[in-house]
Image (cartoon, rainbow, N blue to C red; front, top):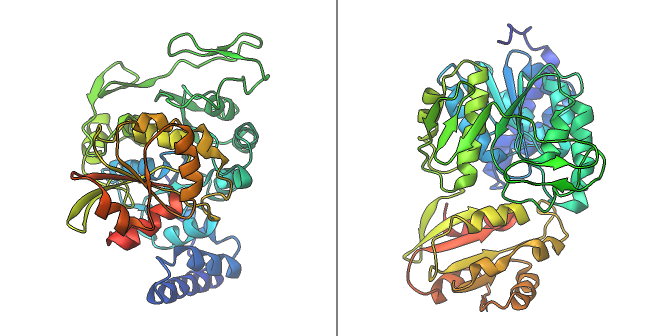
Amino acid sequence: MAGNSEPLSPRAKLAVTAGKAAAAVSRAAGRGSGSVIGGKVALRLDPDLLGRLAQHLDVILVSATNGKTTTTRLIAEALRAAGPVVSNALGANMPAGITSALAGGSDARYGVIEVDEKYLAGVARDTEPKAIALLNLSRDQLDRAAETRMLAEKWREGLTGSKAVVIANADDPLIVWAASSSPNVVWVAAGQEWKDDAWSCPSCGGVLQRPGDDWVCGECGFRRPVPSWALNGDYVLDPHGAAWPIQLQLPGRANKANAATSAAVAATFGVPPQVALERMYQVQAVAGRYDVVTFQERQLRLLLAKNPAGWLETFSLIDPPPTPVILSVNARGADGTDTSWLWDVDYTRLAGHPICLIGDRKLDLAVRLEVAGLDFRVCADVDEAVRISPPGRIEVIANYTAFQDLRRRVGN
């Protein structure tokens, strides 16, 4: 439990006020929520503001390549059973966005914060978290975030000597390598569907052996730790062996894994699994993800997939053929400008679906699907794609900025 903080200094109060004003101007100008510009202004006036805003909170940090926004939301819902929560619920997960979120949490007890992978060590240093949840690491935005082994090494160095309880996925070797430098780790068997970034040992570079759900390096002996929490079908198994049912409105196995990790985090703060999981059921969508909207008298389900691991998980939860599918890919700064990752995605899983392609890089995607032997149509925009799609609910899968474009266009 965090102690009472010292009152904010006049400088810090000025920074908070200026940040909120900048955010309000941004919103009025139609430039989004304003959280990033507001945080940048506040941090310019007081570079230590993030730490000052966090000092009265029990801070929980959540980082991963995939699932961090949803898991942050699930943890926040669970912890509201124990007290008020402040969270960067809309996914602004770099220091400026985090600062903006915490500026609105003066009465909160818990700060549940999603953190971009690149900034985890720095944010942990500034906020002195009580818990850190680490879900997965896979290739994503290699032009910005660096290779996964390098990122895991940065996490490992940043967590050395941390006082936080680290709740980590025992099934991801890169996560285990990163978390193993921490003295207090709670291991969760959350699963790992995408394994193409985890065939070599992060400790010595040897080849990992994967007998069943286990993994071990035959050269140095680095291996999967024994988990104390586990996802088992539709249940979370707690450290005492009790099975708690997962009943989510969010679809897919990946979200059950997110719920298992979230239950373990909540238990760290005294919230029982049954209470935590019941509260998670209230979550229907997260920042537009999984929303079903009506556009041109058609139902569209909006799904976000940013990298090969995310696309693989998304393919597993869409309705079967002949459900129509729209795919949209951009390569702007927030997405990563390198689209070579498209060749790592197994698009043959979409065989039998009528497919339309939109987005800035629809022609890159068209080449990839042509090689995969799929039938598709290239469309000018979502309006055309919806108009020519056959009857039925349409599954719309988009990467980050393409997803934001779609939300603006379809009115969500």
